[in-house]
Length: 390
Image (cartoon, rainbow, N blue to C red; front, side):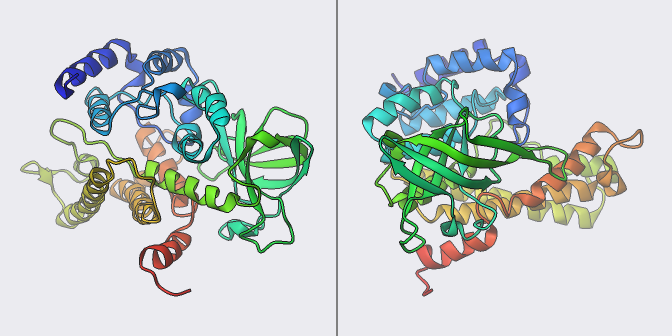
């Protein structure tokens, strides 16, 4: 099938099956579960999963769409053109799925990947601990191999979506006598079992996407060890590269783009011949827009250079560093453009958009921390990309 024919087919399928309630919205991970917990979202997922288009480039034998790089780009362009939300989001698609495709056994792939594609199973991440955040290799959650399963004891923190997840992928210490980067294993475990306790953490933005997770003799199957015993650090690092690669994806939309900052500024500062009236404000908007466009073009260039399907490397830390910083500055600018109206929380004096802008500003203060702090990313870039000495 030619790309033009595939484009026409994709456009018709999306327009026919995507409910209006699943269009013209933006998904943030803090609200993702609530946004997808309704009949329209489940119907949209069912239709797209039937084509494997929840994971378009995964092999068909694991439930994916089997699309080429070019076909997937066309699909994403048509999704953007129709302003359709992704049929599914989460760590299954962005993180553990690609990791299993690279490191998993055939049995693990057959058992886990189709359920990610269908949305039947949601995943969470068990990496950070109270004493091992930026120094992740200092983790202390122990896993002792007993027969055909591991017994886990310890605590994880900042486990996003753990209160909604069916499974967790986790880094655990299986050899306490080894150097801290060794003796770590990568395991998968079910959340609905005795010995796993989840407690949501309330954030300043008003939501609770993060959780504490406690293990008290919880178990993980021996055949759900991913990679080699005591060699989980390699698997864990690669998963983070997939995460950073996925979080940097931007899809080019058709038609004349609308600058969100200019739209806000015109409302609060007025217009002068179609432009934002205030010169200083125009300059701030221009700088932010140029940064975002530069990142978008760089991501697109790297994507074009990696059509071979090569796994992401340490350069994804550049995208994480720059992307998270830009995202934080974007939320800050949107609040700043609203003046005093950009610091409202609730009440009759503030519109819904103004209150949401404040919540977004508070929420996005954390983007340079979670998923690997900016300081950690700069350390990775200096060592792995620039080759500087320790």
